[in-house]
Image (cartoon, rainbow, N blue to C red; front, side, top):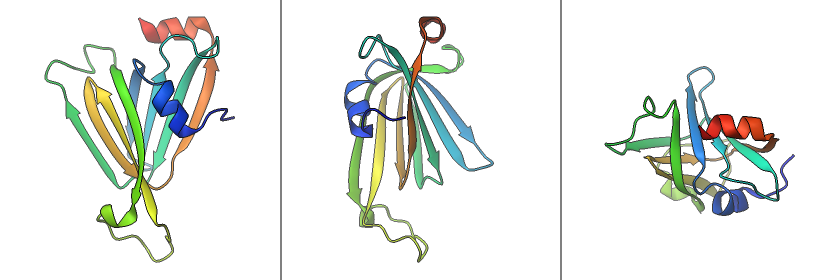
Length: 137
C-alpha cells in the first residue's frame, strides 16, 4: 500500500539512501530498490520502483564508484521526478497510447541515472531493523 505520493517519496525519503539497481531482459524491466536512510515516521522503509517498457535509460558512472566495491549497492545523494510534455520524448508511440506527458526520474550519487517512462509501479515497504542494518553495512 502506498501511504505517500511518488513525488513525496522522491523529495523527502531518498536522500542518502542506498540503491540496488537491477535490469531484467525478459521482461524488459528496471527495478530500483532504495533503503531509506534512517527512520521515517519512526519506522525503517525500503522503496521499490519498477519500470516496464521504459523509453530511455542513461547511466553515468563516477570514476571512483563501483558496484563491485559497494556490494552491488550505490549511494544516492538526490532523487528528483518531473512531468514533461510527450513531445520532448522523441519516440514514436503506438496509436493506442494517448498521453500528453511522460515522467523523468533522475538519481544523483555514485552514479547519475536518468529514466524516462510513461508508468511506474512503486512500493513503500516497512522493514525491520535487522534488514535495515544488512543494507547499511
